[in-house]
Length: 407
Image 1 (cartoon, helix red, strand yellow):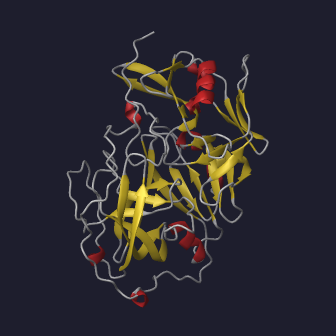
Image 2 (image 1 turned 135 degrees about the vertical axis):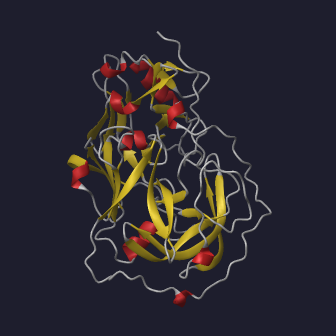
Image 3 (image 1 turned 60 degrees about the horizontal axis):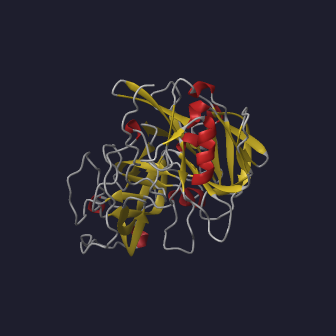
């Protein structure tokens, strides 16, 4: 077997994961940077005028029209981050926004930031002075990621996505102190996670789309394609589902927490295997900002070992496979509401060429993630899972739906 290349599997800064053990192959990550210290800077945002609420004009769109579901095209960056285009302000200022279901805060960099640094791409920065529909709020926001934090002030303006104009939309006007998205043409985050209404987080873009009657149903759905494949474009559907993106019926799971896309799984197991791996009831969470699938480190070790993977001691929780054998590997089965959601080796094995050598890694990694109070262990189902299963986020019925994605 060819000599395995040195692995550099550190997850890119800014991805919403709680563990520091996630690793990605070279083609699926940004350059590794050390985590910033989480100390508050003495720098402050440049003072901004506060305009009265009643001066924010209504959008030009006729809101008496019957609302319909809208598709938002997403761009796939190396199977790691999916982003879309939105506009903020009047006239509209355009931003590329990473679509994160694991966090509720929407933020963009501010042109009035008190901090400056060399950046590897041309961040677009929001200028409230250039928008006639802007007004300020006195409260601050803080978004904490595992390798970075973003802070600044809440601002209010018109936000446009898929041609829908959301009025009185609060978003974070960020005072960036360091790079968040390196080597990516991404400016900020569109937060699609449910929020804790008791916390200091303003209503989300999706909440306002629903409350302002712009959508036919309190539902959005995600289809994620595979990078450099013949798949259709990735798409975020607001207000419903897109039948062209999935096949068969949905398997539904009720949410177990109001401020997370979290649900109960009946178990995880292997199919077609002489040595049975079977894990009982556990919790799972859908997170589009996480490229891989993360589970309890002990169970993930047993699972990958039975599949024939070799544990890399230098990168805890990461496993490498013999590429000549991966096509014959059995499916990994996630049991949801009594139904089996299968991932084939095409879904849970990452292949990459580096230095003329083909290497294969497991997309299922181990993390020391457990819920408190003796509750079941937690699985994070990232985009490796979501590429296989079209996911419906149904806030009206407090549930998630999974259907086989069309590729």
